[in-house]
Length: 234
Image (cartoon, rainbow, N blue to C red; front, side):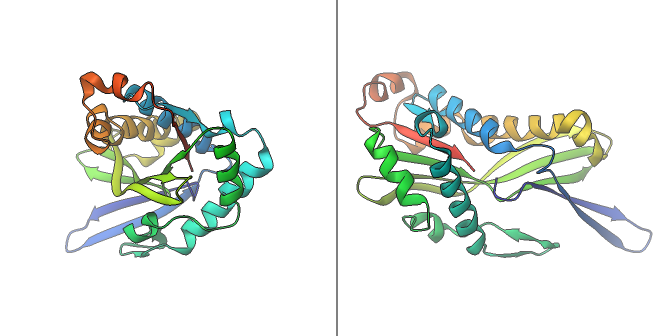
């Protein structure tokens, strides 16, 4: 998650007009989601029959990891596609052509070399700019995380698969109260993001369709593969 913040959006019905309220909450001091969400992504890849390992379980050099994450965050931010039409303080995710290009930012090649030396030939990235909280009416509060995914072939130096338009979404009946997401150290916000990743993005059916494997036979086809997918949720 490049920007550790939640963008709240609420549409208020006045007598003669509609009014929009927007605010943002910086959660960087409350939660660093990258490690927890990386574990979530890795678990769902494994559940889908893909031979995956968490990036930090393979690369134990913190300098290499931090250089990669810092470079990725800066590169991602430089390719935002514009400003949110209803939230002038919020940037929109990069377009598809950004995901399709092999990364060249500082820190990536060092990580790539380390992974290849460790026998890992593919990197799975799950990228998100930030998170949204939206009052949808009738007391419903929606948690949404725009999600962009890609698989990078490290040996041949190219992106072999990407999805620029996925969304992790979950709804809660909270009487329209955004702040209920923040109670108990962001408990419902975290739950909403993780549930949305599991049920709206990285489902077994989605992974089977995207990677062209049969669900019932997925372990036989992927379990003995020589190459593995490493992944990071940044």
